[in-house]
Length: 277
Image (tube, rainbow, N blue to C red; front, side, top):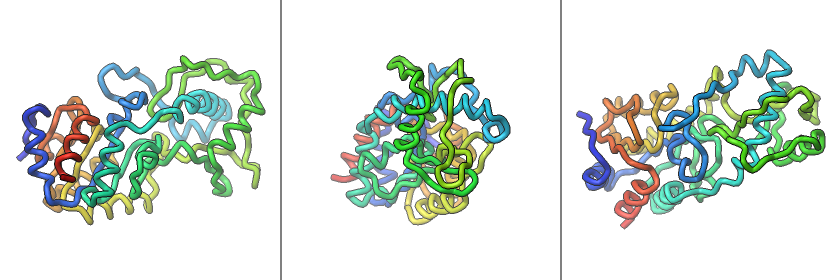
């Protein structure tokens, strides 16, 4: 049976549920808000319609619009630093409490915080993929090429970014996108667009973390994306205890052993302090 309560009265309950268990962790955009990266669906999040994979593939101007916005947003996106929640999970893994982190985020902050077993379900903004030959490139190298091809393009400090590193750009016709240096094919950040599927091997790696754990901890995810709910359902079928930490409701609340309506950073720090001690 699911229990929902406020964090102040239930941190102890979460500790009791997770104590002496290996914990699989699933994180969403809510864990990165304290690092300055906005949430798609949280309170105050701007309404936006991210570009679909079909749009990106089907129209050259759409690719220009995406790359121009992504380039502007990435400068701010990469400046974000891991927050206390990311660091708490890294401590939990080092202490043998966390079996691994599965993240729906593309910001790379878990790895930068020190977590070692991280499965980025939706990819990572710091890599770029050629859609024809599969060659992978460092995002920094592609960013440098974009700067060289578009010296007129400014990167205002006030640019508004989204959780995927994108930004709104109005005039894109003059924007030039670098091509793959191996085959000349089109490039795409190594992230899962709306309308794409999580690569099967990546999802299997996430399943293995859940399979090897004794509990599931969900932090900062509304579980609105199907991949997250599939992992939660996997844990439920295995009769694992499930703790969900999120501001506001999630699609998994009814299936959780305990739901904490709380911020992720302070809650994860409290959990780490208690479970590692």
